[in-house]
Length: 123
Image (tube, rainbow, N blue to C red; front, side, top):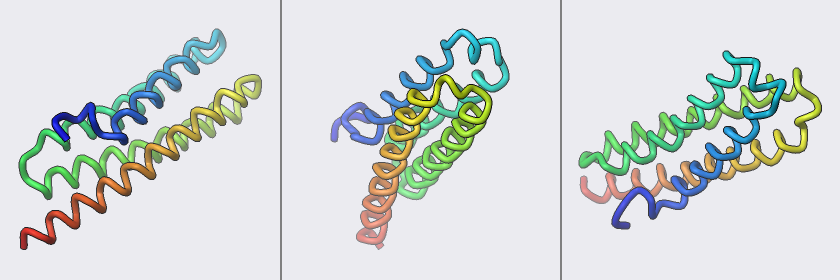
């Protein structure tokens, strides 16, 4: 791995961000500024924290940022239920976006586990 762009988790997070932005561009949802903004920021947080964690030199810091990223996956999934409950015409798009978030979370779990194993190997 030469850069965070090489991480499968970051690549999936990028797809998630794009899906969230496409979803929040919908005419009705785009007028719900608070919800759209929170959803976008949470999705961007997933991607950004993976990048920031990758760039950290100390393994505990890496793990902390990856965990923050994984927590943001939970936030996005939760916010997608708010969208689903209030904008039922977007259900197909919500489901596909939720699936991307779940896949990202799984990749992050694997990344956290492998980083934790590296940390243990050094001690």
